[in-house]
Image (cartoon, rainbow, N blue to C red; front, side, top):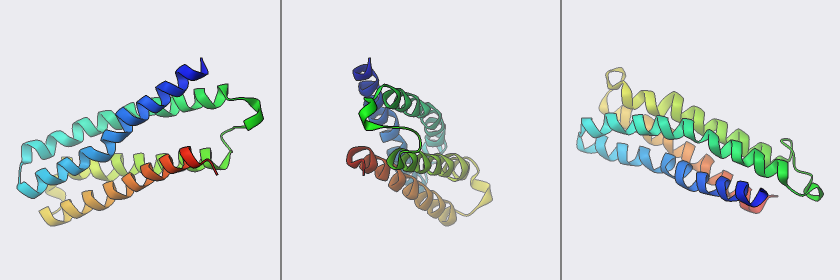
Length: 139
């Protein structure tokens, strides 16, 4: 059963978290070219993927719960706690800044809109990459 949860955890991370890092970049391209239809479609898929990313957390807790006791894993294990904090930051940036910026263009000019999305989605992506490093390195 632990192998199944490990496979599900990695698969959901690749196929759900991966697009969360990529979709804002395609939206930025739409903003640059003035393709408003695509720029407003990007956040809808991004919101769905962001909420769906909770499956990665659920399967991760499953893996942690089934781990060999010799590893002494818990939510307070530094690399697990760090990963969770980085995940919360990435989700907060995506749901709190990236998506609203795409959906409400009237609140800022085109240059500010582009900059806001680029910076916040870039930081979210760095957080997601840092999570991968923590999951592999396990300091």
